[in-house]
Image 1 (cartoon, rainbow, N blue to C red):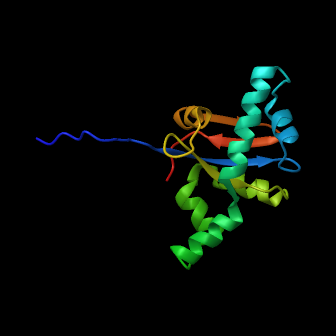
Image 2 (cartoon, rainbow, N blue to C red; image 1 turned 90 degrees about the vertical axis):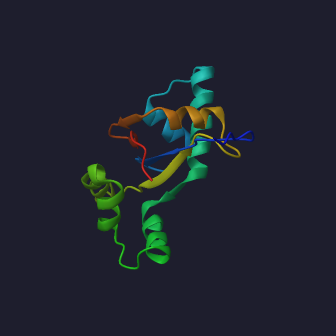
Length: 141
């Protein structure tokens, strides 16, 4: 039997899709999420927005990267079918409406991951209204 005495991790990530009506700004994000200006909730969503802003890419750029590095035949349709089959129609409708859709992920550990990011990585959530679509409801790789 072997026993490991150094650092051991079982980290994971949770991917998300996010789209805001209008520009991707803190003000639009908190307004769309229905967050009031209370100090603790406002600070939490401000930090969450900062994490999201640093971890996302436009879905069209993700498809280009997939095509360049993994599959030269990758299209938006094939990417959505593979990575987000249950959100394929929603993403297409958002794009058709002229909205930008971003893909990102939360990490639950590792260098630079904050407690807040770990919290959002560990818990599933989904938020959808006329102003925002935010799906981090499943682990996806």
